[in-house]
Image (cartoon, rainbow, N blue to C red; front, side, top):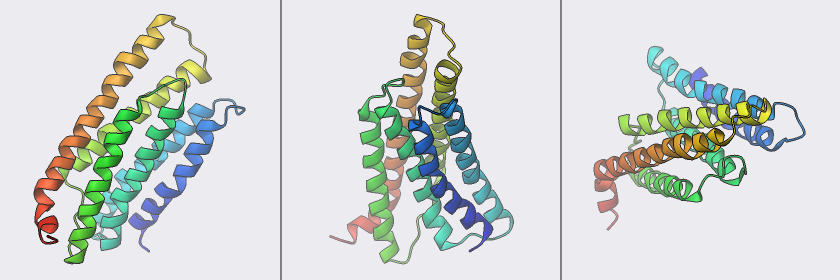
Length: 194
């Protein structure tokens, strides 16, 4: 297994560590620790692709696992936010994002029957990058207001509702747009199954 694929596998292995840290309320600064782990996992996403292209180590396994690792990381974080009383995120964006991921993954499977591996396109990469940045911002919010106990009164709730909520919905819209682009470009593989 080459280095980019090892980094991708590492990203998947960091997911359970992130989840445990998010729920480890007895540990001081557990949101900060979770943020560090999430950022480290996100950096592997940037590094694996950069190394694979620079060293000509792009593999079919990497094209398949890299977007899957991203999905696992992002969906896990958003699911934790839905369950977290500090963020109190609506489940609707998560449901839309999961639905899109199932549709795109299904199309990828159909394309693989023809021996084609559909790599992430620019819209998919933009969606992933924006969503990861949004998750990092949410983790910073949790770190500042929970771990460090900063109290700015009602402004804290306004930041959560308007800033974080807007970022989540922008991520959701990018998810829908990137899913539509995948459907448009990959519909020929679906049409063959009729």
